[in-house]
Each structure stands twice: as structure tokens, then as C-alpha cells.
Length: 332
Ligand code: ADP
Ligand code: MG
Image (cartoon, rainbow, N blue to C red; front, side, top):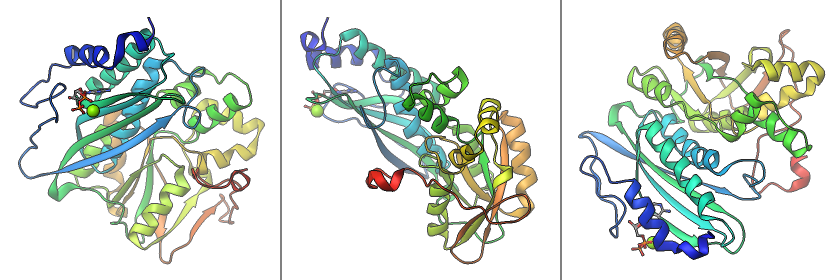
């Protein structure tokens, strides 16, 4: 059945039946959702869109995975503030030629990720799109007022750390664009990223991170946001970047790929700064959570960002992070 036959209200009714709100929140079915926050916590709200042809291609991913991704990329922002994800809103522009099965799979992915992160889907909007599939999730979370981690708290001397591995998603995308099929581990990191909610929350609760951001635009671009927010410079050690086994294999064949670990986007790892005396605590937290945490450099006086190789020599990066409105020529 085509979506156009089920219609907007048929789809919403199916969603409503699958999301009978838990707790005391008022969810899908009224004019607004109504929610309450735990006492003493700040409300965190973030929105990210995924647009067909810009962020994804329907022939490269399945709908269920795409549904999970659009939740994960939003929840990742909540994690980067040290928050707990709580509510989701799902705005959808769907072309009339999509089938009900596809839309159901998409919604299933959204609901699956909502469950995974402990958030409730409480509303959204559904429209027909004249030009491709448009997905927009708004995620809300909360964080105790005294624990919120912003981009602005880093000081020179702080150690810069990242979770997980860098560059896998960008490498998968590069291979897809070249008409190659990325191996499973790389493809999953691109199509099905996971938000680092436990790490973000614990770093905040233990007051281990002085500044934090999630890596969506690439390590260097996102570190640039921390530098700007904190009024600090930074130095990154190129040879300390955490990389997966398939990324390392590819790097052996093509050394320039190091620039994807430095500047490629959509890692959705956490990038954070830690006072030097507390790095051991952070490393043991990572071990406890089964998630690699790697020191990759430090914050320095001034406002410049440098990348150095193992001998301390400055390394010139060839490719910067992704910027939607950069001219195509600037990106290549
Ligand atoms: P209104 O016209 O008052 O905006 P709608 O008909 O758009 O109401 O939506 C009816 C209910 O369904 C609302 O609670 C809205 O939040 C919810 N809703 C609509 N589309 C979606 C969606 N894609 N995901 C989740 N909830 C949705
Ligand atoms: Mg509406």
C-alpha cells in the first residue's frame, strides 16, 4: 500500500497506538505534549534534520536503520551536555510514493532508538514532501543545573580526549560515493551511529569534563567550537588518534586518509577536555563502560589549533570539516 492511501491520520493513529505514553507525560494525540522535569534539572532541547540527497540516500540505507540514526544524532547532542534523554518529537515530510511498509519501518527504527535511549516519542508532525524524504527529530533531555557541560569551560593545560574511534563514518561515505561497498563495521558506523549517553552523563555527574561536544562535523571543526567557546587554543597529536582495525588497514594503503580521522564528520563520539590530574579517572570510567577513551592532545594558550606528528613537527591538514554552505570548490 502506498502512503498516500493510508494518509496522514492513518499513520498518526498507528503511531499513537504504539506509543501509549508511560509515566505522566501527555503524548501523541492532543494539540501539545505536556511533560514534567525532575526537580532542579534544566531542560535541554535540540533539533537535527536528515534530508534525502543531503544526509542520506534511500538506496544506501534501510528505513529502520535511518529511523534509528535520526534519533541517535539528536540524542548525541543531549549526551554532549551531560544530560539524560527524555522526550522525542518526530517531524516527517514523506514523498507520496513511499510505501506504508517503508514508513512503518522508519517509525519502528525511531521507536526502537527511543527505547534504547530511554526517551519517549511524544509528538511530531506529518506532511507530504514534494521532493524527497525529510526527517527532523527534536530531542529533549534534562541535566541537574550544576552538572551541565558546555563548550566554554576548557582551560589551557586541559587534556583533550575522545571516545571510540574516529573516521570510520567518513571513510564509509567516501567508499559509497566511489561506488564501493564499505565493509560491515564501517558501514554500520555511518548508517547506524550510537550516541554515547552513558559516558556523557557520567562525565557530567562526576564533573570530569570541563567542556564537551559531540563530533558531528569532524574532530578539528568541533574542537574549534570548544576553542572558540573557551577562548583557548589546542594542539592535537596526529599519531594518537584512535582508529578501528578496518580504518587502519585502509590507512596503510592510503596514508592521506588520516585527514578523515581529523576532519571527517559523523563520528558521533564525544570530544571533551579534562584537567590533567583527572585523566586517570576518565580512563577508568571508559574501561568501566567498555568504551575506549583516548587522550589526543591538549588545550593551549592562544587561539590557534595545531596538529603535530610524533616528532612534534606541525602537520598540515588537507581536508577540513563539513560545512553545508561551503562552496563545493572549497570542500574538494
Ligand atoms: P495539529 O494539527 O494540532 O498539529 P496533528 O494532526 O499534526 O495535530 O497531529 C496530531 C497528533 O499527532 C499530535 O499529538 C502530534 O504531535 C502527533 N504527530 C503527528 N505526526 C507525528 C509524527 N510523525 N510522529 C509523532 N507524533 C506525530
Ligand atoms: Mg501538526
